Length: 141
Image (cartoon, rainbow, N blue to C red):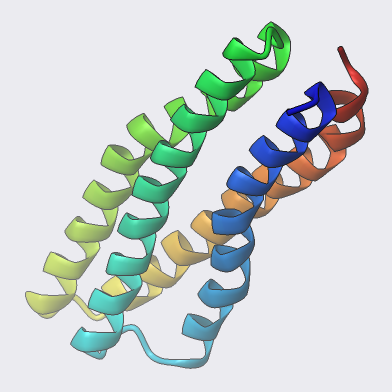
């Protein structure tokens, strides 16, 4: 595979789960998060997204390292690290709010919604950064 094709393949590996999450997560803005199955589904979507980004980031990092693109591999490794360590932080906060909601805290769904927005924003920022880096990664040898 040519160096440009390797870079494009890595970008596709990363863009697919980020794009899916970008399209799927706004649907939860249309429903109430005080409904337990809806909130659990949202939690599952975030959990799956973090796990998929961890795997995609690690695969992308290894591929770029094997291709000799140290700077690009470092950037992708940072995405993988964010998915690995960010998952624990994010899911703990989500679980805390789900428990508070189940305990009768009337403000917990609002805090869940805020967490939902922050997760979507974080993904959007990473997605924009990744798309903006494509010309630099694809042409660097």
